[in-house]
Amino acid sequence: MTCEIERKFLVHGFVPPVAATAQRVRQGYVAITEDGTEVRVRRASGHHTLTVKSGIGLTRVEVEREIGAADFDALWPATASARVEKDRYRITDGPHTIVVDVYDGALRGLCTAEVEFTSTEQARQYTPPGWVGEDITGVAGYLNRSLATHGIPPYEDNTRKDDHGR
Amino acid sequence: MTCEIERKFLVHGFVPPVAATAQRVRQGYVAITEDGTEVRVRRASGHHTLTVKSGIGLTRVEVEREIGAADFDALWPATASARVEKDRYRITDGPHTIVVDVYDGALRGLCTAEVEFTSTEQARQYTPPGWVGEDITGVAGYLNRSLATHGIPPYEDNTRKDDHGR
Image: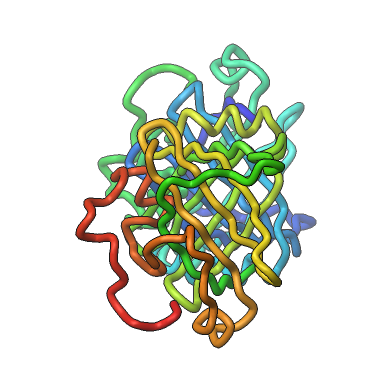
């Protein structure tokens, strides 16, 4: 189980640092329920995982297990209607790591940045570098399960609905 | 991955053999999708598992991983609307094992028997012992995911829709 405190941003015109290498991430959802449960398979750097996330907000729970390539391939067809492909870069920003996702396929053109924190206080105080764009923390349309099924949200959704760090 | 060839029957007035011990099984569904994917957590004999089944009929795929008790407890609330509790007995019948499930809770009164085979030919030729009742192989209403969400099907559904072994 993990509980994440993070902020998420849009990035425009991202240029990877010269030495950066991307991790190719391919993920699909075998189930997304109305009460917020999602079941995902992911392939990244030769590893395959099965992840269940359930609950909403602060009580959100994540259980992840490694699976074999054959299991991944067997479950992949069940994700046909909800997939995301992206290149993931990890960029150091002082004590933080900015995870930049450059989306591909139907989501080409979208680029997001996520930063994880150990406390909500730390999340609130964080100021991202200048190349990072709008804060989209908590905007439902940018959740990967939403991107996978509905595509990139319209521009008017590109704002946070509150003034807090998360 | 596994692919199961099995037949399923109703059992009426089941009396466990004197020496038989039951395995208490508690399972719940965190997701059931319209295209037949189900995601289940189960506790049985102190072991906890996370299982994803997807696909329909012969192409049905099953991926199962052991999870910890804490993970099971964390995902359990997400199964609130779809749970099954039962006592499971394994009874030897010549070369076969009959798995008898005595349901509890909202499904109290229901008892089923399942026998797994290594070929469809073997499944077709099998004759169950006299204490085993109606053949309900392939009757959707008796799938555990259906029992968990809809309860015991009405009596008129207690018949197979074809004349084949599965």
